[in-house]
Length: 343
Ligand SMILES: Nc1nc(=O)c2c([nH]1)NC[C@@H]1CN(c3ccc(C(=O)N[C@@H](CCC(=O)O)C(=O)O)cc3)CN21
Ligand SMILES: CC(C)C(=O)C(=O)O
Image (cartoon, rainbow, N blue to C red):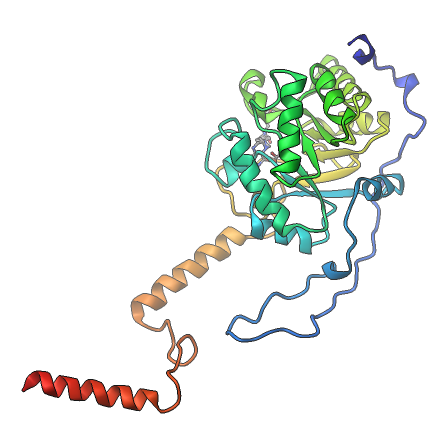
């Protein structure tokens, strides 16, 4: 496709050049639920600060408006129902079922083992939990590289069987024809350039990309090709801050950075990393926002201790009574049975 060849020139950059400042978004008011059912000792879920009940569904139009207003787009991964509910409740704009789940949720050493069928299983669970964010499913390794039509059938499955609204795929200039094919039938595509983990072996591991002038130029060409092929946004993973900023300024679509600095139009992190759950790998770019892993182990250890010493479960609190008067009758019958047995 000759039309897909891009030659970057800093002078020919898009007119919609955005300055990426830190934008202050006023927090939504928090509201307690009017009525909390309490038929068990579990008090029920509480409302988060983003007041998810009154939230509108995020669509491509919403995302475009957010980008135009220069408000950073928030993206977070989810891989199952509870992690999707957390994303939904916290006011995140876009929920990504990333193939990093192969590592963080399934324990593989890289992302290439997971199949499309396995991804679809996780995507459906996420779709059940995340009702407001825009939903993107990652096309896993092997499900889109062979040909544009192979990629299109995988994308259709992602929408129909995975209940996602868009797909993400890794690659630059070489994937432009594929992205064009998918977007031309109305399936939104999120591009992904820079460190593309599915190609980690060829890249020599999970390495920062675009560290030399020549490699940075190639990244800009890749991003422009992905944009021109119809991607609605592009993930920039592990690229120097200055390069990510320049790519962002060159594009008419938002960039979603991960390890790419604050100059991007939005940010994404892997949920189990930023919550301090996954402990095998912690990329330099990841900030720890909670220590859920530590809290979980402390909770489990206390449970072990209390079961062993008999303080859990507590009678009356975690137990069920018989109907009124039935316990006495039952105990009396038991003692009579025992007496009969001893005869
Ligand atoms: N749990 C998890 N979090 C992720 O963010 C993530 C995955 N898994 N798996 C797929 C990719 C791989 N990612 C990674 C993993 C490690 C580094 C990392 O440690 N990079 C080194 C720099 C190496 C170099 O100099 O090139 C670093 O210091 O951050 C970066 C991205 C991001 N993705
Ligand atoms: C980190 C994001 C961008 C991703 O690709 C994933 O979670 O797989």
